[in-house]
Length: 428
Image 1 (cartoon, helix red, strand yellow):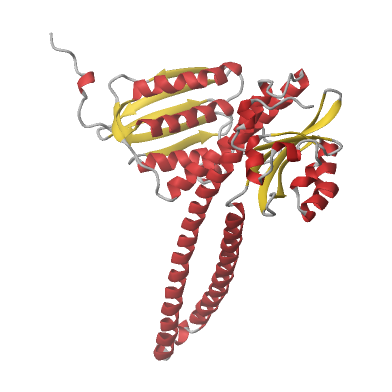
Image 2 (image 1 turned 45 degrees about the vertical axis):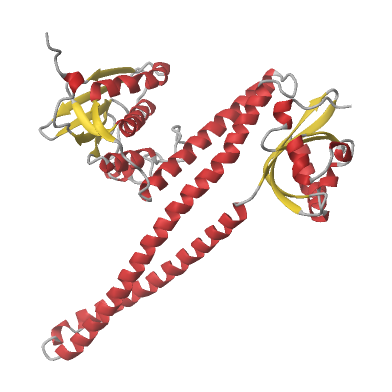
């Protein structure tokens, strides 16, 4: 008889079931039992197909279990479970097959799907609407081009055909009004896209966080001891999960900025303190490549900005500098002041950026090296987010670069008008 599940797993906020290659259920947690309406004795030692309707049983026999046996697991497989009352419940299933006590056991984690279908339908409708709008825009563009050609042919007869030209001009005005309406509609569609991305990013982070949690449970030995190769595999899963979560967070941040949902807590910020708080986060990464980081930032420079947003921008700039600077390179952080502004410059002697890419790197999803062989990871959102945050605080982010010599990113921010109490010399 299988050992009882630990309390943490038994009451986890997701379903858990394990079964052998014969299909008989060995363990099932209380969360899943409550959702399907069965008692533990009604399922343990019974075939896992008891949880499925007819269609899902066929899918289990022909696709799911063969896939698990072939690959040793499966991720995000959609399955319909049948409750004791006969209702269908949609679940996303992550499965792993491994050997325990001399037999092969398949462990499944099940997350109930509530909003996914509605979001998928909304995405399909949005795509169809966008395609239809693009077709209409192309048709109207062709029509405008034709009208323009006709106007050029009639230019020589302008004096004698003024009435006809006025009529054509009236048509162009109408067409321009239609184009303006289409442009407004396209802007609204883009805003809807940003809102949709924000919602979907939240929905995607939930299963990713669950995956990270269960990897930690497995590493803790909740299901028994794990071997070194298994621990190495769990490490790769954990790194991949964290990487994907960072990418989704970038998409979410960009969506919030585009949707105008970012609030700025502007206050006097000492640049020296800010640099000192960010540099230690980058030192381990720089040390691995023997890169030296220097900073020349006077104590007196104070900006009017959101401290967390400036930290986010500076961390992104320094991370990029380390990523694209070769081993034994150097990075310098300098600060300058003007009457109404202060600036932070991140200077590296890395690979540099071609002139034609200097403006493009601030566009979303644009990367300098977009080849399949590129070594640097990322979505190409960091610089786009950073410049939008800088402009949201009344500043800007610019770039100077020479291929083979390095790059200089300059973050310019409004300067604080008056000194703060902690900047003044104490009275004797």
